[in-house]
Image 1: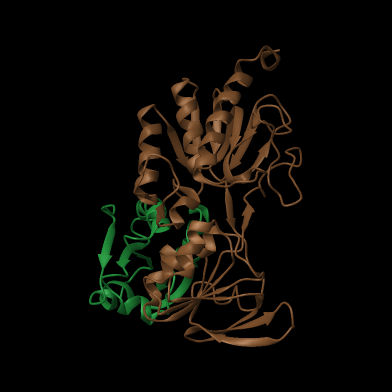
Image 2: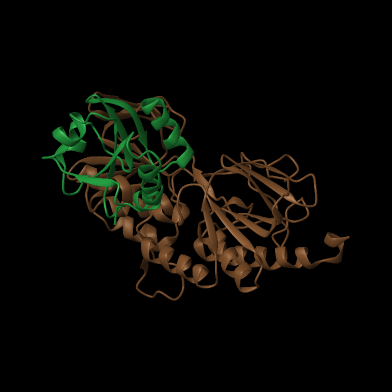
Length: 110
Length: 313
């Protein structure tokens, strides 16, 4: 379902793929039963192409990987978190416009 | 520099009203663009299942219904773009819609931007949004397995979502400021029959408390006695009405005191060539079934406006 520039991460790969990434990572916490998550999926796809090389884009299915969302206190989806050097730098809860996500990304990748 | 030909019709918003307007406009062969800010489906996608849209006797999930609406419009050539319209200029015969990616010009516009959930506006609400405070039971309900949660409100949405949340939560407390629910009877019956649901009558939430782990409890006030009590919950789902998404509209588009767009029976607003459809409109019943009717009527009359001699004159 996800575009080719998007990686799927799990509780097991989170440390390596996200926290140890050399470039910032946008993680989209989602689940198949969440309508607004599906609604923003095309926008996440577009961003992964537009910021290719500058930003890693990852999806984390919270149904299959409960530990990672719990670690960050996530109790609502979609939640988007941008990690830089292993730290949370931006967090967006709920479905928002593409421009708002892009603005958050720009703050981090600049 | 040449300006591209304007669209015949631009529909702002991709929920049931906008998608139906697009279907009717495309079938009439108007050059049509649908602009959507987040993703097609609108508020519809924040619910799980629809039981009151005719033609689906067993109900239908909102995913499926959205896909069907979209496929039908696409079949007749709907063009759509992901962009947020931030303002609209209606001073000339051609309307100009401003987006971050540049202006879009249209002979006629259908406003179908719907509504957003109304906030309670109490202490703790903003702070704990996403950490206990939610406006979408389908999205966030599964995070509250075997926990105690509250639902604020007494309308269809509040009571329906309270019933939905019993699939996950151990206990669901409905907090309602009156002594009777407004929800349609069949939904009320389902709630009263559910042993996990407790209704707290004549109570309002005055504060939402929490800590590092999120929400821990609510302060409730009795509207009759003024007494304040505490209710321990780890989640609070707020369904206290809707706010129309009309901040982008110019003054010239008349609104009622709550901000809903005023139209006539043809869905025409106070600005010639600008129509409105669906939940954004001032009306009595905000449902998918009324939104699609509005959408068809708006597109039909927008077409008549485009063809009218007055418009060409």
